[in-house]
Image (cartoon, rainbow, N blue to C red; front, side, top):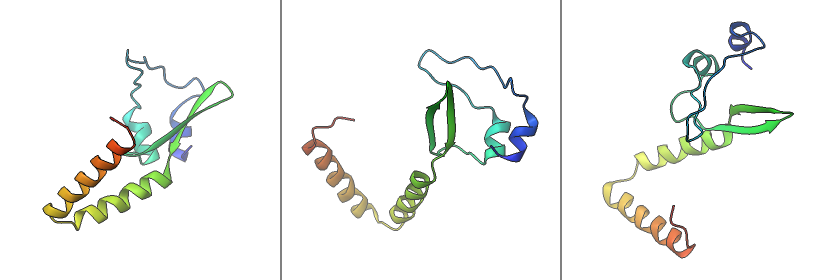
Length: 96
């Protein structure tokens, strides 16, 4: 945990209610202390009865690189890329 996070909260932590779809809002001051913004990839895993959340640097770095690469493409190239990805997904039998 970042320095600011530890000093702001007591061991009992914050109690939040999970939504019906399983979402939990992470308070803004915690997100700010960790440097998390909308779009940040977060790794979540169980550990000794707790859920641990941490920044997933590999995915975040990958997405940053993908976004940079996409910014340099013109409309036609983006259209071809979308068609290619759709065909690949269809070939793999995925519908997500």
